[in-house]
Image (cartoon, rainbow, N blue to C red):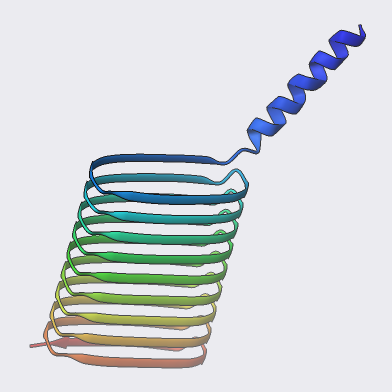
Length: 228
């Protein structure tokens, strides 16, 4: 009887230990691809897929139940994901050459998506707080996007199609929403929100447009449309 109890106890300890384990999967096809994954905590999950030449992916996960999915195809693409907290989710997809994506998440249940297709695109997302969401999609070359969220339940979206477009979204507070679409080249958009429930929409078609939106307070709304 004593042996049976000890056996059952050992099985339970083994099951609990497995249930709290971190999971990392790296798949590389090509030449000189590099991946570095660090996981400290429980139930963190990281998946890295690299196809091509000299792509680099770095993933740092600290906390519990964070998830990262990085897919790279091409040459000299680089991605860095840092997660510190619980249930943060980050996706990076890069196809082309010399694209760079940086994601930093601190808090609970933040969500980030970065998708890049082309050459020399740069995207960064920095989230601190809870339930923030950011999506950045870039198609072309030399596009630049930066999203910074500090607070809870903020939402940001950036879509760039063309070349040499620049977008910046900075949100502090709760329930702010900012969305930027740039179609063309050499367009510049900047959105700053400090407060709660503010909304900003920027749409730029053509070239060389410049837009700045600054919102401080509660429930402000702004729409900018530029075309040539």
